[in-house]
Image (cartoon, rainbow, N blue to C red; front, side, top):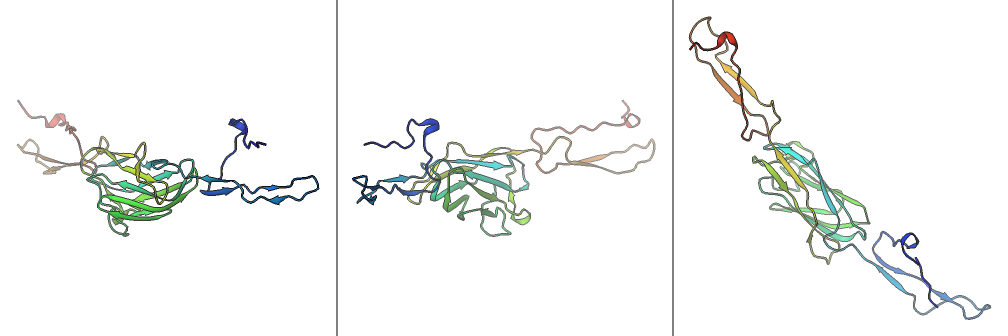
Length: 237
């Protein structure tokens, strides 16, 4: 006799539990209609596995930051079908960004919503990660802002935070299919300040004006500063 549970698949299929482990299908039997259902000597078991190493998704917010500025990045890891059981994550912070720290008040202070976080060089490690399918973990780099914020590089471009994942304690850290990136930007158009010296001159007197432009946070990359001279002050040919 064959019993098919979830016969036909599709809408008729069954969904395993979100927790990882061994599921026992306790089985009883009676040999006659007047008999008593009695446990057989061994019931079948199905192992509910974690997702493969390198599974899940990792996103970041915000996706842009100004060059040479202090910022806080919030990363979200979402477990794949199968989840994780005492798994781990590794995030490599790109060169030019603050080295991560687990001490509040240090630049690049890093926290996690679950598991245990540590930092060495430019690498953030999270261990003891147990998540059911579709559950999330939040990693905050530059948590709290202020002195704890992360400092962005002074150069412009895209910074990729390479991420690896192992779904169990015995798994192997494996690169995710896609790692999050943050665009390091220049300051918005119209940013910066400009001053002039001297601030006052005598009418019709020959003079020299010195203009000083200071770039805003984020700086400039092959930008332009244009100063329009008032008609009354145009130099004589």
